[in-house]
Image (cartoon, rainbow, N blue to C red; front, side, top):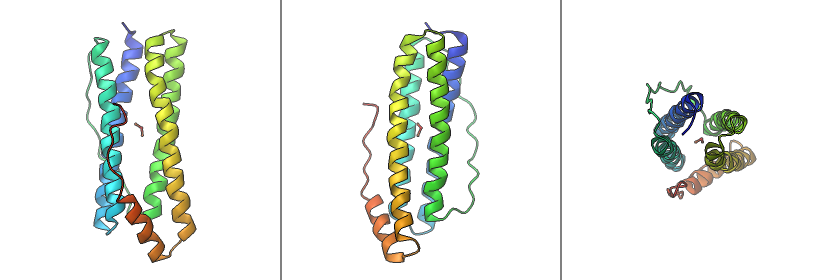
Length: 168
Ligand code: FEO
């Protein structure tokens, strides 16, 4: 049993996770159009991960007997991002997600909703990994700068990423 406000806020977050998936799918398409097929693969897997995050929340809301409120997912507004810009924009997005999840976690604690608090700690920890992965890629791209060979080497490494559902 969770409160109406907690349910509303979790529903908000559920929709944000789906938006994140949509954002990364858009970036994947952009990377593919620019010939960065490795980055396109990396972002496609990011899309799958965000979908898994959303579905984990969906299952929790179902288990808590909450009415699930699926809303319109707006199209991400992307400029024509550079290779580096794609990862920088993603990091900025993840920082916002981290902030929102921390707020949500803090709210559940304030409400003494310990089940939801425990549930949300998975997301809080996941955000640390997400930001670390993006920071590492950004550092590597900055090191190689405009060196085409270096960028293609990084792109190749990004192409090796495979999807492992983080929620199982
Ligand atoms: Fe599910 Fe990357 O936030």
